[in-house]
Image: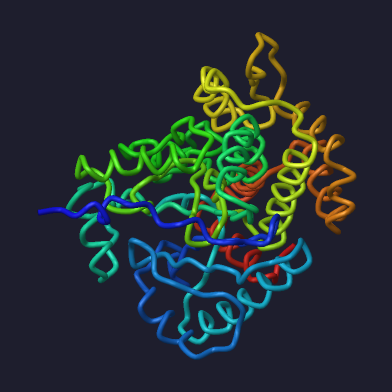
Amino acid sequence: MSSDTEYELQAFSQSAPLTLGVELELQIVSGQDYNLVGAAPDLLREMAGRQHPGDVKPEITDSMIELSTDICQDYQDALTQLRSIRHQLVSQADRLGILLSGGGTHPFQHWGQQAIFDAPRFHHLSQLYGYLAKQFTIFGQHVHIGCPDPDQALWLLHAFGRYIPHLITLSAASPFVQGIDTGFQSARLNSVFAFPLSGRAPFVLTWDDFAAYYRKMVATGVVKSMKDFYWDIRPKPEFGTIELRVMDTPLSVERAAQIAAYAQALARYLLQEKPFAPQEDDYLVYTYNRFQACRFGYDGRLVVPGSAEQRVIRDDILRTMAQIELHAYDLGSTEALNLLRTEVLQGRNGASEVRDAWAREGSLEEVVRQGCERWAGRLS
């Protein structure tokens, strides 16, 4: 007989407001043919006991790993930690004769060749989702933002919904899938959307209401923990954060830190200025806006929630950057914002850089090799 405690949501932990945490899923690449290689167990063994911030963990298949920072105060803290973890990872990868890369998808790997990492949770997911589990050999950046209390966390989660196209476009780095240019800026998110508990969180603004929703979901047997939700943004009660999950893993740790800084400044702007009140009807255009960003990036068009106004995504990002400029200054991330603004004005992101490399080299193997060199900090 089930007890009521089985259905209870974990209490929302205390967290310093606006602190950051960054997670990056990385490709493990063969130094011979530049395809993915199932070397995660070997790399994790080499990393064991090494001194670095944060953590390095397995992911669902053997050809990927996830790095995560400790709690970061600001952009420079995140950048320093990410560079330190990268240094250790690249050093140990070099010892093993393997390479590491950013990017949301590997340009020519085939999902059927991937092996599930030997861990109970990953085997469970493989049994549950079938071939989708191996197709989940895709690579994302997650950013955690500390929230002062659970109700403000839910408010911020829904307020961020209208800026999801920004985060997708700035990080987009997955134009190729299985050797084909998909025409998308971020093809990775199409794989995420295949999961039944993906999409967006239910529109509730109090932790009590969210806990009631969670109890109902657990009672159905569909959900066993918060990890079962693959939402674009989800609360993380154990950390006292919201987790932004739509970004592709950028091609460098520097870009990953800049995107985290943009999210932090945007969160400060939203929480302090409250420029609008989130509404359920904001989600009427959510999927459309999300698609436009995935497909067209900076040139996509979004519908401003609560209106019929349409804006080019590039223009909306630049407008928002102007609105959050003082917040970025107060947080010490003016440099990050300026670097991102330059990319926006020039229409550059990871997807455009991958396509440029393909046009220049005519070889996806060479595109991957250069991506690995860039990730390692050996190629600008």
